Image (cartoon, rainbow, N blue to C red; front, side, top):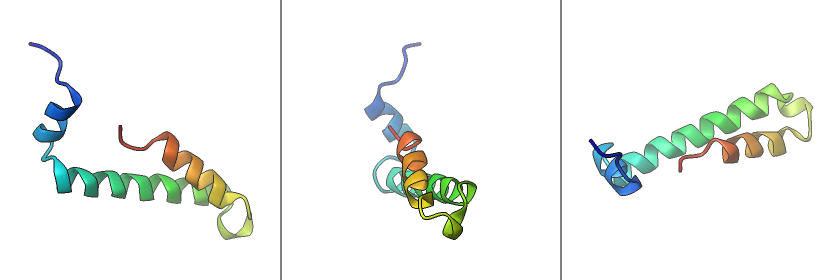
Amino acid sequence: MKDLNKNELIELSGGGFAYDIGCTLRYIGHFTYGYIASGGPINPGSVGVGYAVAEATKCP
């Protein structure tokens, strides 16, 4: 059995709209985690940390 390529994986997982919604929720979740873990509204640099975490863990 061969490995699936990216297009086949997207099609298998519902593709298109469903894939985009899942990736958006994942991005928001990781941003929120990074934001809160670095101090939230108390720390002015926490937005940058949240963004960095979300970018590092976003969908391929």
